Amino acid sequence: MTTELPVPSQESARSLLRPGSRIFVAGHRGLVGSAVARRLAEDGHEVLTRGRDLLDLRDAARTETYLKEVRPDAVVLAAAKVGGIMANSTYPVQFLEDNLRIQLSVIAGAHAAGTERLLFLGSSCIYPRLAPQPIREESLLTGELEPTNEAYALAKIAGIVQTQSYRRQYGASYISAMPTNLYGPGDNFDLETSHVLPALIRRFHEARRDGAPEVTLWGSGSPRREFLHVDDLAAACVSLLEAYDGDEPVNIGCGEDLTIRELAETVREVTGYEGSIVWDTSKPDGAPRKLLDVTRLNALGFTPKIPLRDGIARTYAWWLGQLPPGQ
Ligand SMILES: NC(=O)C1=CN([C@@H]2O[C@H](COP(=O)(O)OP(=O)(O)OC[C@H]3O[C@@H](n4cnc5c(N)ncnc54)[C@H](OP(=O)(O)O)[C@@H]3O)[C@@H](O)[C@H]2O)C=CC1
Ligand SMILES: C[C@H]1O[C@H](OP(=O)(O)OP(=O)(O)OC[C@H]2O[C@@H](n3cnc4c(=O)[nH]c(N)nc43)[C@H](O)[C@@H]2O)[C@@H](O)[C@@H](O)C1=O
Image (cartoon, rainbow, N blue to C red; front, side, top):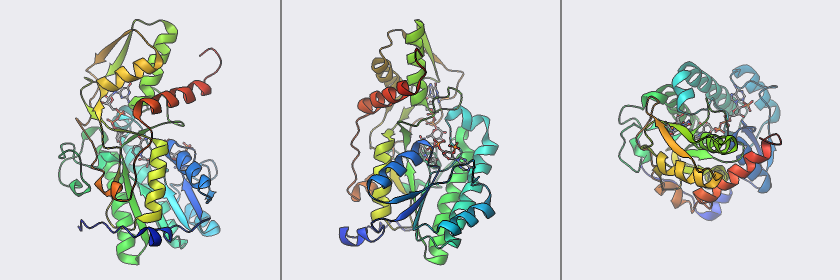
């Protein structure tokens, strides 16, 4: 695999995504898809969407028919079966099969429809569980995967190879990005299936509301994670669509991580909860650390704008606005 990074000059970069492009955002109701759709619309693009009620993206024939009807200039593939550590461990079949099927449908369908640009979203969990930190893109396929998300990771690795294969065989301008752990408005707050950050917001909020003396969190609290606000992720995705046309995936992160224990303290303060924290070590820790090396992304001139504490406060405020009165 080449390690060269083809980053066009600012002038030619503009030509990769023409002003007023028509862009299909798959998964536009999700955390990432909604943020990417907002950002593309703000930038003057026409955002095309189709809800799962009208189009199940696992259905390759119907997906191809839809894409041939609308003929988008670009596709952002943000539809996926997604969840936190417990959902990944409990439902590996769906995390493998739904994601493989969605990727096969959307990437092949986009090519059949003549779509010029496509951005596939993977995840930092594609890298080996004990990869050297921060994790460079070159670490892909150099070691064993984290068992709690192996099925999901393998599906995502297949998606990277699929985009690379369309580029190599057909010259398609299809690219992949590997985001770190994300959070923000539109996140999933279901305690069984969510990622850690929305789960902590909800647990501390409800404990404060109910006057609970302690909150129980999963694992040891010692794993380290890197968190990026989804609006920063959306800005990074647009930068890649505008300016990156390479074979290799590009990591998207903020370059800093913290322990889950430190994260819990921050969320506790933001929510105003004053009780104590108990760690349930019967629950899995997952990967010990997965800080991404963001040298490639930074070469495009991207820097995240939303500090973690502000992002958590904004996400908490957003979620409070979704709750029924008195909750
Ligand atoms: N959240 C995170 O921390 C991270 C996410 N990512 C990646 O970002 C991408 C988006 O994740 P995120 O926004 O968090 O996930 P969400 O679960 O919030 O959104 C996923 C979207 O995909 C749609 N979808 C799922 N299955 C189908 C289907 N069969 N047909 C049509 N639509 C479908 C969902 O539709 P509906 O609204 O109907 O459920 C939803 O809109 C994924 O590829 C994920 O791997 C990467 C790293 C971290
Ligand atoms: C984005 C990424 O997301 C997943 O990987 P993960 O980072 O391990 O996921 P997570 O956010 O669920 O947990 C992070 C850490 O936090 C701890 N933790 C404490 N208390 C709660 C808690 O209440 N809920 C959750 N979910 N975790 C908790 C938990 O035990 C773990 O140590 C994969 O799906 C993977 O495929 C993937 O791509």
